[in-house]
Image (tube, rainbow, N blue to C red; front, side, top):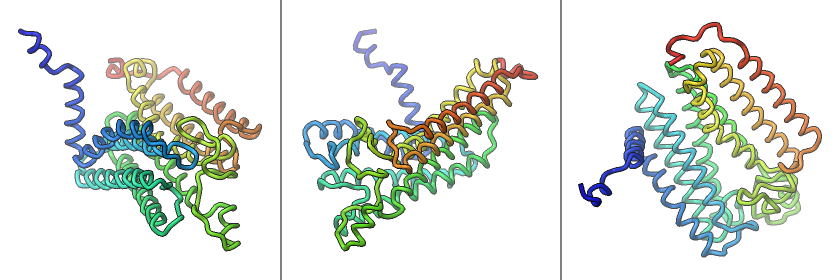
Length: 335
């Protein structure tokens, strides 16, 4: 066989990618196409960051589209994977996937459009058009939250052979829903400074904010931009949202042969619950810290005490469960 013939043969990784795409396509076509579009847009946004000097709220205007493309790509892919666990409800799966894909697409299109207009997308009330754009985005995130909640209900109702993975996926979706709820705190109404300006009859260009105690656009961490001088609700929003991946990975690790040999199913389910509750607690503490106007890089003594308390309870619970000798380990678990 010639070298050209050998090079034309599909590699193992090529076959893996094709199988993955085929599986995604079988679950839902619109979501698959949407995710491929997001992946294709990332290189263009990276180039735009270099060639376009547009600055919005103190940072390169294209950083926000990049962050949202990466986040929505990961979220959408995980959401699609979770839908593959829902059996016997094909119509529900298609509705959830199609509506979620459309909502994610609307978010990305509007964010990029506003960058091209050299203005902000979130909280923008500078013009009636900008207010409409943000209103549409707010509706889209509400729809995403509802779809997420419905998926959680379907997974709770779904009978699965592996209880460890079942509870891991359920808790993952619940954690993600909690992260979405944080977004509504950002849009609950005008901030104190915005309210004061409105009461004084002044014109405001933004209603709502992700920063607490300081104005949006101040000093922040590299790339993510999370405030280093005040509270920032984007942090618990991000952490909670991506509990979808973290807790799913935790459950997957606890289904591996090494974990099965070491712990009984009951122990592994308990560990998943500990991880899920600890993750929800972490999201809650991050929200509490942000609402107090406290930067993620400057927690006070009370905040440190709260985090230490959460970590301590989690460690004690893990040790109590993991060190307990399983009463019996089935032959299947040993395999």
